[in-house]
Image 1 (tube, helix red, strand yellow):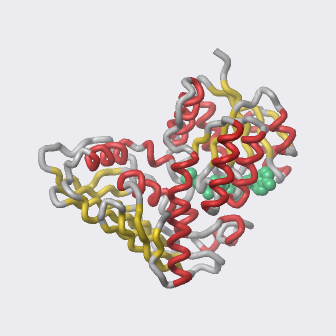
Image 2 (cartoon, helix red, strand yellow):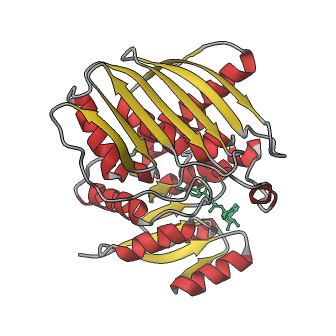
Image 3 (cartoon, rainbow, N blue to C red):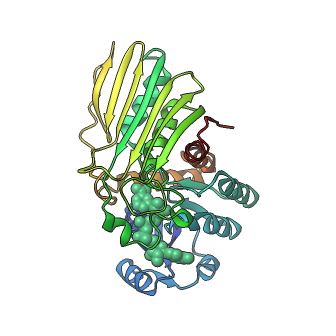
Length: 339
Ligand SMILES: NC(=O)c1ccc[n+]([C@@H]2O[C@H](COP(=O)([O-])OP(=O)(O)OC[C@H]3O[C@@H](n4cnc5c(N)ncnc54)[C@H](O)[C@@H]3O)[C@@H](O)[C@H]2O)c1
């Protein structure tokens, strides 16, 4: 069978995870890339031996390409997702899918009209610990869930923001500790707990010289009735791994990064998935490639059997909606109800 051809838009830090993941999969082939930076375009295309395109439009005319990975600054995701859908290319888009729920809706409509599939990167969803915990929560092992909390006390240096022309800006990052870094944990919380009814939040810029929030705290009420806390910051020294706590009236679980650290569940042994923790709380690129490999493979399988992807455009919109609701609550000082 012919390998599916990949192109990448945006040849910066994360694009190497996409290139490595595509190269690790037998049924896919990396063929081309595009970037506005001639330096990044040249270096990346040489490193992977692929065709460089100065213009994204030209790359989208390349008939060898079936799938495009969008790895540009987040504020460009909507534009490129719509362009790729209109060119009938399937899409892998980095998180966040787009910066507002209405931009997500435009992408959803473009994918529907052009019959293309989308995978929104949320690589932690493919970690065994989260998949397992979602299952046992749904099967009722923890009883009635009363608390579901995610704490993301990360460190990003002033230089991290100063060295980028887009990180920390509203226009291209769309937010800070929540929209950029915290979205991973928020997506996992929603994956396990389902829909949120309402939220009350604070988002503040306390310690970094950036437009967007470097610290946020929110209280959520899930549709199930459970209450939860979302805390995200990029300004804590030294920075700590993400901590998820799920407590029910019959049992409790704590997961630090991807490792189950507390497992008080009657009738079940603590599972052993090995140590999968990362240093991403201190260094944005300090994580393993396997999540990207699994997620890109998920799209390849969906294309092969004309099925759905695990993190499709509808799933990708959910954390963006919740984060925007937290920002709205912080601005208005009011509880915000999710639609
Ligand atoms: N999944 C993860 O854990 C993870 C980690 C890091 C970054 N990301 C996401 O990946 C995306 C990129 O982040 P990054 O850290 O790689 O950024 P980066 O700044 O390192 O790279 C962005 C690249 O896009 C290029 N670019 C900018 N405008 C462009 C345009 N109009 N057309 C084509 N190329 C353009 C830049 O020249 C640069 O090469 C962001 O959305 C970010 O949120 C995800």
